[in-house]
Amino acid sequence: MQLKGKEQVLKNIRHALISATDQPFSQLDQTQPVFPDPEDSLDVLFAREFTAVNGQFVYCENDQELVTNLQLLAAEKQWKQLLVWEYALIQKLQAGLSDVLHIGRNPERADAGLTGCEALIARTGTIMVTSRSESGRVLSVFPPVHVVVAYAHQLVYDIRDALQLITARYSSAVPSMISLITGPSRTADIEKTLVLGAHGPKEIYVLFVDQPA
Image (cartoon, rainbow, N blue to C red; front, side, top):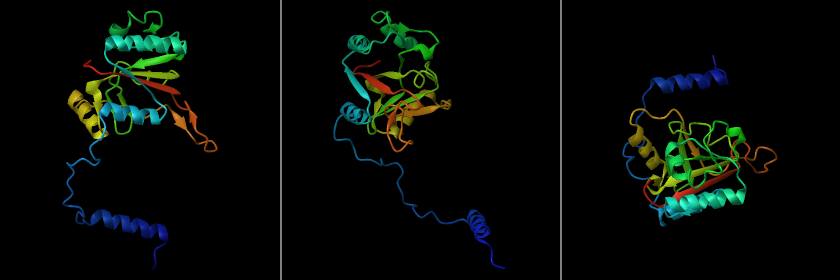
């Protein structure tokens, strides 16, 4: 009796699961990098790729310049509440931004959320954040603007390098959420028209500090 199409497909799947096959790429070297080495420095490459996806990149030589640039940005954007939950950032920024920096738990009232990150991925202009940070899952998503403070040691070339940073930092206690942010939230589902801020922040800034944290 000839099997129907669906039954034949299921029979083929069962047979494939039972019968072992030879590895067609047994000589494949998985230790070699997939992508060629970057031609530019990682900070230049990240800035180029990040701005290409509508991100805003701000270079800071040190923490003092970080505070100054945040002050200018808050004044330009007329932010009244810049929400931050990470203790290290609060300590660095509170004196210079005491009029707009808030530590409360009301992200719906914030003009912008300020967070750190786990890594910056230069090849794709991507920010990696996890649920293990003091900002948790909320602050990078809920406010209309996301401001990220990142340092030179967090800059890597590819996602593989970023995952190695996560493994080295957390060992076996890998965060339950690892998120990759490449530019502002966007969608083109409605008549193929690009809309920014559809599922999260409509603007995203990276303030890159070119010194150790």
